[in-house]
Image (cartoon, rainbow, N blue to C red; front, side, top):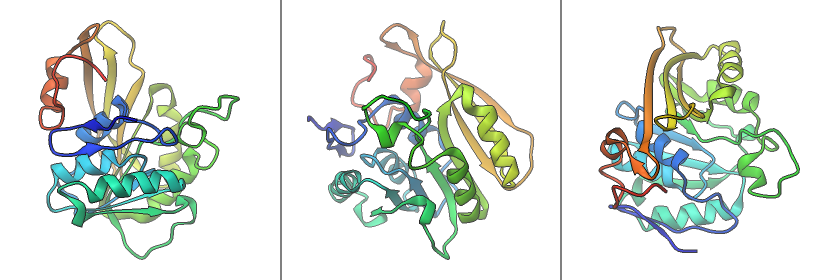
Length: 234
């Protein structure tokens, strides 16, 4: 499988690991990362999100965990081949059983969000079999620093459920970025940022394409330090 090339790093891919996609790029580019010294990514995958965060914040150390040994192998190789290798680590770990005394300034995830179904495609990465929303939120709340942020990208119709679970663990929605794939379409994704501090939620809207196969000015600006192209979508 061909590597996915960015300006400052390449992403080697595997048929057994969820491939580079727009959701990951949006998460890596939209997450608030400037404050973070210690970052935890839940679900390393190819390592794309961690690599984007490492590029955006040269002061951050990033640990990415994944339950898939193949994902850990792929992300480790991508990390070691990058200019940020000294600040990146990939570890084979079931997040539900992750124990550490360390607290993280940013916990980030593009989590499995489909209910269990009969699809055989990317089962662990796509379906809530090994990690459901409650497990992800509860453990993240335990590991978050006092000023830390917990950021995810999920389907917009899961936002209410996710936020309700968050409140039960004293995590409150600070930022919501509503994602439209194309300007004329209904939004399907949302980037959500949570904190242990109560505050008014900042709501933003983001359009990926202004017309079919033509990126919006906002998307081109957001990804200008990453993508090698500026017209064709992923």
